[in-house]
Amino acid sequence: MQTSQSNRPLLILLVAVIVVMVVVVALVAWFTVLSPRPKITMTDIALENATPSCGIIFHNPQSVGASFTLVNTGNGNGFAVVDMDGGTTPIGQNTYYVPAGQSVTEVFHVSVDCSSSFAVSVWVSQVKPA
Image 1 (cartoon, rainbow, N blue to C red):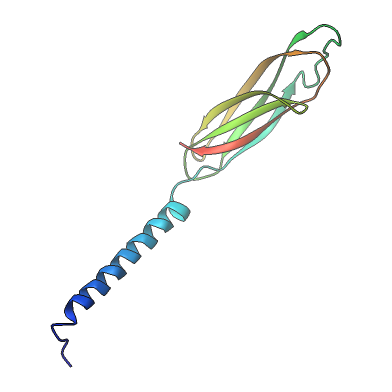
Image 2: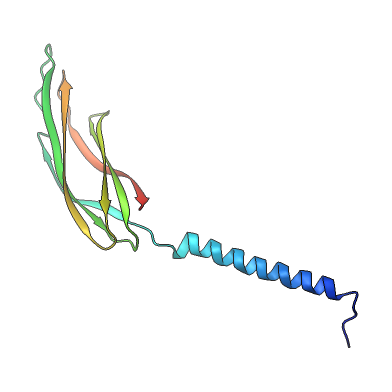
């Protein structure tokens, strides 16, 4: 059986729609599954002056900090956003570049003006692709 001339534009349209759908699925797969992504974690954390002695009446500037290693086990370069807080109060944030498959050791110090004692904590709050 031969395709009539009147069905030919419909057949071309159908093939074009299928090709577009395949391209869209391939692009979605690339950006969601196959694209390089960083996976950064923090290890070997050593806090410095983690519970500073702060004055009750006078505000005493104190240096608090941490040294740590950022490990990127992902397949893409990335940035780790590292937050530091004292109790429930944010006291600092830094961003560090970590190449794919590598680790970097960093030191993060902040000077705080405190009036009561608190405990310092540090963590990776966000990972961004480079």
